[in-house]
Image (cartoon, rainbow, N blue to C red; front, side, top):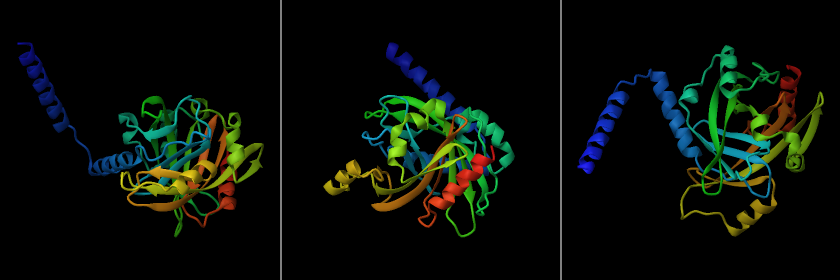
Length: 278
């Protein structure tokens, strides 16, 4: 009797669920955005585990558009050893190409940022959105959550550049993490704000038991602060990331690109323009 009642309840739930899903209506643009984001989340999960020997957070997400890095800052959640994409209906359709909507996205993340619409090097605002992430331990158990505001910039015949912003109050201040300064390839000070530059190499590997890093590569990851192994790419490949990170007004800023021709001077210059625009 009890089993029949449970079965009946489950069937009613399924019927109600299907009816609710059938009643959902999305525009063509929303459907395309949803597919893109689901693809992004699927390829992002378990892409990289943070190196335990460093108190430095590196998030690498391989998507159809680009690899996005949140980097150079400490994680203040204790036993977190990795970061994976999460999902929230509140931010799923946050992507916009309207720069005037910046204040709305700031409210979703809970931060107030300084943003530049056009940089002097020719990079112009293209789009922005809010991303949800969760920090996990070695067993993939959630130990924390946070949101990031990401602004994408484009320039003719050049690779895309991302400016990623998140609360330093949530994930920790840069000045509280000595590893940031120790790891940096170069540091400059702009109006009293320290800006750190890193040029990192990533070895991307497919999530397959038949493909694994060599002993030499594993050893290098332990000894080289600028070499990372990430899992989740379509094939074995090497790619490079140039980025600068700084903190201003309790907000961490990370400016990054995968263009190997864009080096420290240009990224430092963009950081300076953001700092001076406050």
